[in-house]
Image 1 (cartoon, rainbow, N blue to C red):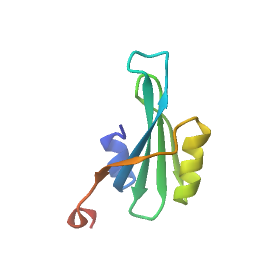
Image 2: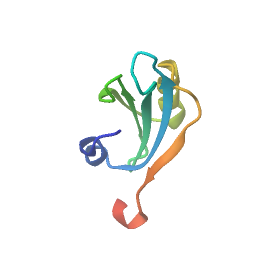
Image 3: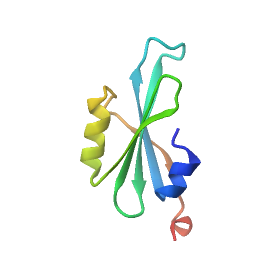
Image 4: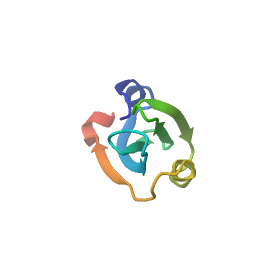
Length: 90
């Protein structure tokens, strides 16, 4: 998961996740997260087999962020897991 520290530091307003098979761990998969920042930039967070943040990229566009995630073997299909309310953004 994207840590609270990253959520506040980069002012994340929405988060999507996607997964990748990882047969070396019991749960069978790891996740990557895509976060939309209030400044219009995008945060790509790749987790490792312990589900800790291993790579964090702040990129200019959503397609660029998704390319980074796909390049690491994650599936293209993503789902929204978090969206802040409009009054919380200000």
